[in-house]
Image (cartoon, rainbow, N blue to C red; front, top):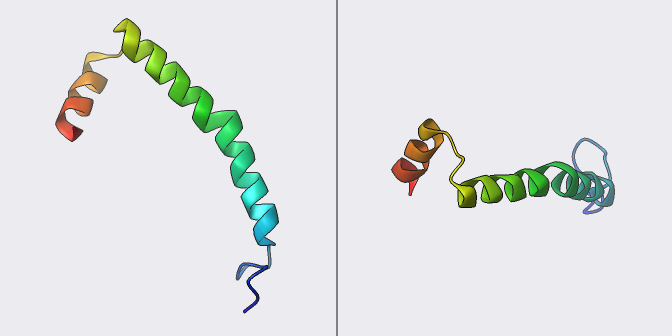
Length: 55
């Protein structure tokens, strides 16, 4: 198996680029919004309970 391609035939560089785009466009902005809401105390009670349980 070539280290340049995954089993599906997609190049690793292409897959990493797609993952980086998703990270920058979706994951990081959501995390920033979550941290802002958490700091302001605007999280739902259900979410606060879940965070305490998992901590």
